[in-house]
Amino acid sequence: MTAYLSATTFANIPKISGVLVCNAEIVADGDLAPWENPDGLINAADVLIATQITLGVRTSGELQYAHGDLNADGIINLADLLLITHAVSLSSM
Image 1 (cartoon, helix red, strand yellow):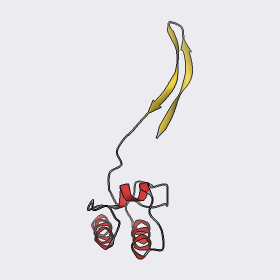
Image 2 (image 1 turned 90 degrees about the horizontal axis):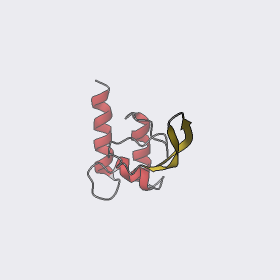
Image 3 (image 1 turned 135 degrees about the vertical axis):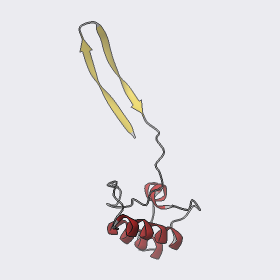
Image 4 (image 1 turned 45 degrees about the vertical axis):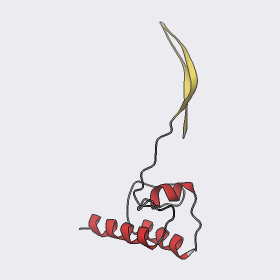
């Protein structure tokens, strides 16, 4: 992710400009939906996408692996789908 700083000038502060680069690690949390734009919620939409990935209907990219590979085995599979489904069931209690 790259955030750009706007050029700002204050009375006694010099002009600041540049690029701020943030290399924050994405936590494998099961948040797969909406596709390519996770919303911070773990719900049925995430289960649907995990199911589609597991069945081969969708192809995972880096973002999906980062969020959806909950057991860190390098793939999103049935084990991850079960973990995401379990997380959704716990959040609905």
